[in-house]
Image 1 (cartoon, rainbow, N blue to C red):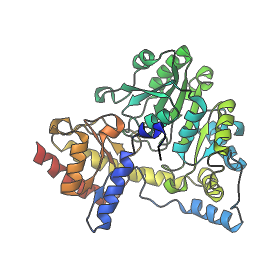
Image 2: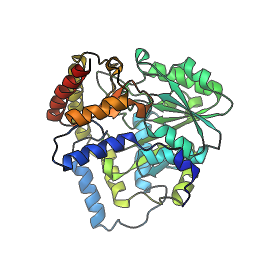
Image 3: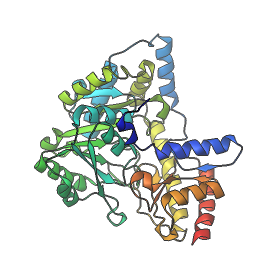
Length: 388
């Protein structure tokens, strides 16, 4: 059967491919240190699991509204008001099948064939592929480690054309862990307002911050940018709910209505009882989130110290998420060559930077246990020294 041309334009996720290979090696009995997937190794907090179990016991297993359970939409709106200074109501919120699905809905709802979407690189692997699936044109703007892998207002201004529809902002960032300061966010907001485009702000790592870093949602910068902002987020990272597949999109009511229409004809509602777990996540104790953040902070420090001691590897200090993005340029290897050799020879799994638009880097996730980090960093050190 002839496949649609759009399929050939999309690159499979290297992040998932590396994780799949690492798991296959483990199944064969090999001891693999995996730093590939951005998935917390902690269990979902007990009160969240209990809320879903209660919902199951109460028979909340039927179809629900395509937009999401009203109580969850209200809880999300209240969270955005209280924590992010974004004055959204329930009409401004749709619950989606994970944060990734919220972005997919948005691109389908807003991108016409030929529209440009500006994406700073390094970028999360799925941004450009989803834009392509929506028949849009991903415009990649390279950033540098010297500037903390952050796009500057002038870079953004120069990238905007009459075809520009959206700018994708991700802070804290996957894969670099960088966090834009409030001043940097405001400067980007000024350009967006000046050029009259829209911004989608992926904030799924907002609760994972270190060393006093501050998360500032771009929609709170001014009334003018608020009207041009769509926020994408979810429960996977901060609440260790990766497999629950509950995310959300918040923004102008007309955009949300369009996404609800699309979702009504694609996935229908998000898993009903999982949404009751998400309600408990927002309304219950936040102590488990802080406990996980503190554990990530310890792992981050250990990994930074270990990588800094490896000759030939350099990286900008990450202030959020759970990733390091070191340069491997001095090894003379491409990121694919480096990653494949490291996995084959030393059973250490990392994600090649080419997946994120930076072929001279690799991504290391410290969302794993300390024993794995300690062993893996020793092996990484041996591997790099063998190549220098």
